[in-house]
Amino acid sequence: MMFDRAKFFVELRKRGSGVFGTRLTQGQVEGLDAILDEGVKRRVSLRHMAYIFATPYHEVGGTMQPKRENLNYSVAGLLKTFGRHRITEAQAKRYGRSGSRKADQKMIADIIYGGSWGRENLGNTMPGDGWLYRGGGLPQLTGRANFQKFGIAKNPDSIMDLRTSVRIMFDGMLNGLYTGKRLDDYHDYLSMRRTVNGTDCAEKIAGYAESFERALRAAGWGVYPVAAPEVPKPTPKPVQDVVDDAARGGTSSTTNIATGVGAASSTVAIVKEATDAAKNTTDSVSAILAAGPWVLLLVVALGAGWWIWRERQRKAVAARAAKAVM
Image 1 (tube, rainbow, N blue to C red):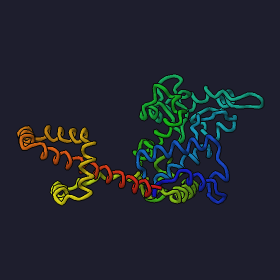
Image 2: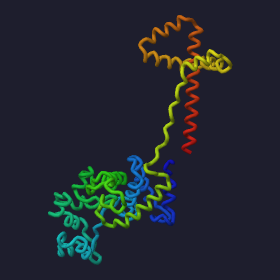
Image 3: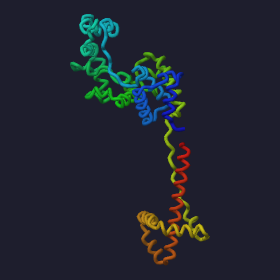
Image 4: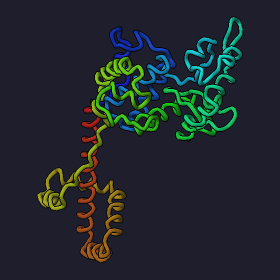
């Protein structure tokens, strides 16, 4: 069964799907398509694919689009979220959101992701690294060291490119580049959360993965995405059978001879390939020419007959394959 992308979207839009609801935005469709494309390219298994879908569904609030971290914290929010070991009360009061005053997000980023903590945990070694390498992507990627790991340290804003962010997510979860843990290390959805962020919200995300698995399975993903069947090459008719047919004569032989004369150019090409493949072919052709025109005509007819038979077989097999795909 071929994977039916349209049916996958229909399944997600069902009222009881467990994700999204009854409609999808253009941004959600684009995000889902990008993830499907990467999954097909990498031939990701059904359960791994379901969990990969569930992760950005949780991380970016179902938008399925990359985002940058919002640091518009209030004074109290800064102290509660990061603690006084990351930002002092005086700093929180100076840079946090208060009344009509907006938070100074750049200064907040350089404080909470900078200093000795940022250097040791995120590889932020230069002034401004906290803001430059603040969280971004589908699962949020944070810190100079992590941006370097995925090859985008020189262009950190590329984390907002959908295809780039999708590639990073697949590399991080399949190859263990986020936490050192790979999806292959686990068999259950609860444990798979360790590939991104320990056990944070593991049960909730496992539920999303179950929903995506049902949609993928209903659309025919199977264990791996099914590739289009290859059209088998026709098996050439044995030369002796062609000779026997010609010897018996009859209407079909006469027809093949007449058609063969019209297909002489194709036969010449076949004979040329044969002459290139064998060292003694020149002598053989000379012998055929010396034997007389009737022998040469028979050789041409046999070659043309085989060529016609091969073309009919190829078209018949292609038609059967196309019907099977439909």
